[in-house]
Image 1 (spheres, rainbow, N blue to C red):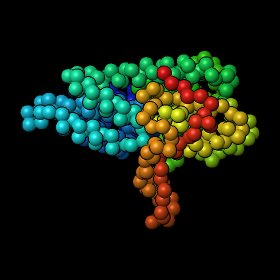
Image 2 (cartoon, one colour):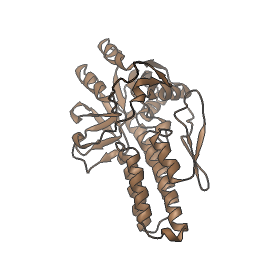
Image 3 (cartoon, rainbow, N blue to C red):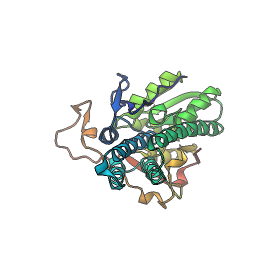
Image 4 (cartoon, rainbow, N blue to C red):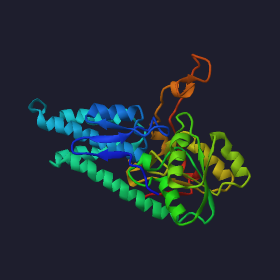
Length: 320
């Protein structure tokens, strides 16, 4: 089960897999500057909390190089501005802010920020391996697993978070089938998770988001595994919109509900999920599919990208 790399690090620039084009086209986009990175994060060329953190780290490394090589930019003010811009690019996933803050601190200690960004990338890969091994211990043989959004190699630099657990459990012969919910409005489940499951040879079905309750009622789901973009100090977890619904359904049907995320996703500064900022995205994501209107033009839209699952609905949080 060989994973395709979501990011390639070259001598002085990076290439990222354009996830907006998957599953129909595999294309890498070259990023050479802070502005390149911010755009790639905002338009979701790159997505997934751990990967966003990694790419943001390289974005700050680009800004640091500019500061170090241009006499007019001496001092740390331009680096602080770069950090502020990166953090604003996507506000919910805390891995982004965590990685940026780590590089800002490294700059104060006169470290090489390019090497620091590479270190974060390798650490996240190792974290995926540890989460996979730990999480697989909770999976029973013959399990039928439901997951949402995309939490695999495309969202990280390793096997993945929730999908990393699924991959390891499959290697151990524990997985019967995986149900991937489509994940409206951007269809990360349909476009990305199904693609990764096929690449890994894992048996799977694609379902629409509103089919989960039906399958649970019929006894066809043994556990639900999801990722997280930010975990509050009390365990409340923010993830792709629709995750909370699955947690409520799982609780009602007495089905284990697991969250899988690296330690960098835990935000101890936030007491509970009530304080997690929820990103609101463009109405076009709901109004259109592949540029085609699916409802009346001018229809008003609410498009929160994430929701928060309270800790009392979570059976366990699997971290590294």
